Image (tube, rainbow, N blue to C red; front, side):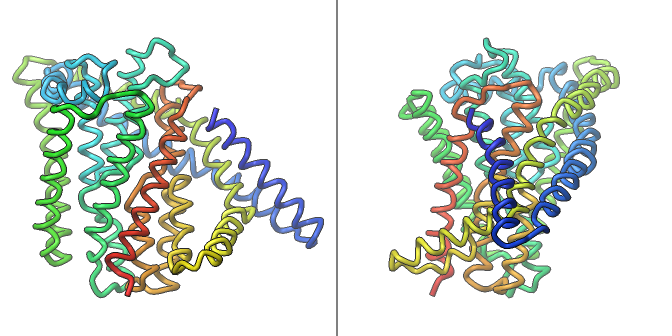
Length: 412
């Protein structure tokens, strides 16, 4: 129901603001901007998002099907099963969904968005097979989605690259705050959803698993933090892409070893790519057009101005408020947040407090509403239960953590 109210609310707010501007100010451009934005975003949702995704989905779902028939996915599921069984008690320890989810999380951590999406959609479809109520999100689907929207990423390469393009003196200086911020968001997402589902996280398996991941990340951060930007970029590019290529080649070689007809298995899995991409188009169009209407009516600017006014009475340092547009846009639109991040760095400078803080916001979470529409839409989920609320709460915690990290690292 939360997504239902958000969807309707965006259009109602856009109409109300446009009407008030016309009646009180004689502004006739807002109606035009909203409608043109809706039409443009309808095209973008199909031509720039859904159709390009079709090719990527087709290829990776084909490779994934080979891996399943070769037993690789089941082997990965058995390996990660004891840990995931605590977080996803509805999913059998040896179910393929466990392997698909870990591949999705791994691709996200390495910044391989194009690979993460097919793995994630396949995982959602596998979880749907276990879902007793096909139009209502299961606990396992919500846990997976909320963890996915936390946007855990080891190296925020695109942010570092953009800072370099804009002339930052040390483009990678936001590296540690970004990773810490996204890790905080991920852990908070896990705790919030576990409390909602009454999952006991205080057990040896979960504590050991989280402790191991935290330790590995701390060591990686310690090592990478002492390297120059160029070397960090090289490590990221080589590591991420070599792992992805190894996965593809490994799955295919495993299929050959297990006497699988590799090409037939690839074609069988690849056929689902087009079907899945077509299925998600209505969900993408609906939500992205609604977000466009909300943005183009000026509602986002009014929200920022209201927050600045409110914080001005607290006596706190309010330098962070100029970075809030990125934080508020990120759950709605990744491209919109990226554009606002670039605008802020151009206006305030990439080495300014605001210029660095917008980068932390951009790297600390993912596009919650977009991901909800994409993933739940792919399996026909209509009742998302508390998924949106839990995801947005985690996003808010990520924003607060980002502000704290910004002041700790960069504010004089």
